[in-house]
Image (tube, rainbow, N blue to C red; front, side, top):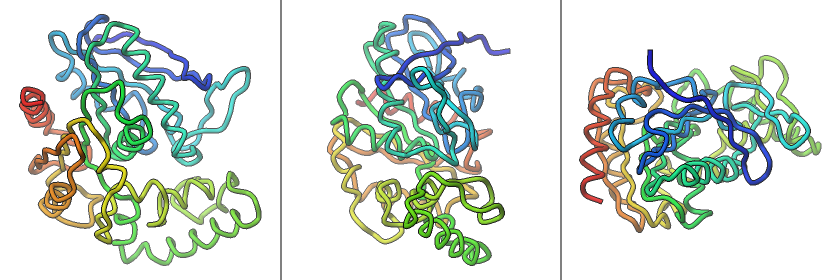
Length: 286
């Protein structure tokens, strides 16, 4: 059993988000964990327990993209949310709330830790907020969903058909309508699908290694960034070393450190000690 504290905080736009706090309540450093697509605060606890040592705590919360389809409380009403329905750009409000909550509990140092889709959200937030209020960013398995899906030959017919259906719904003025049953692997709205699976979307322009575009948002991040890749990432369309090279060639203003954790898949399960080791070494240098 891993001891932690249950919590709820309100974002600036009045959305209530639930989470867990691992470690000291008044820790000097707080890692704000941003989970991946359809995940939640209830994942990766082994890694969080290892990170939450001494004067360091971890805030893990279910952002409005948790699970596939759900609802969140916004003011006096509940609104549709989930990984299949969220509006990507609204992640700024979620992270605003988490950073403010951490600071209100005495954190002198806040580090964003994004996993998978949480990586895009971390960089997008830092770009929009000019990195104010945080001291660094850790990216765990930063991948493009478009690149991953487009590389799977057996997925291309489904991807093409779903894209056409999503564009038709957008044209009809129904961005938040769900694609027809069977159009994609899981329920997803038109706007969410296009955000995830078209190369020109805001979300996919954050790590555009698939067409060698310069990552304009990443370039303007002014705090140090650590990018860790999974050596056997089942969702990547290319070897981890190729990703290392691309990220190293496009560092943010705050500097970029890259490394690969060998023999682990996208979840980093079994590689938690290595992740903590790389993170600890990076923190000692920034």
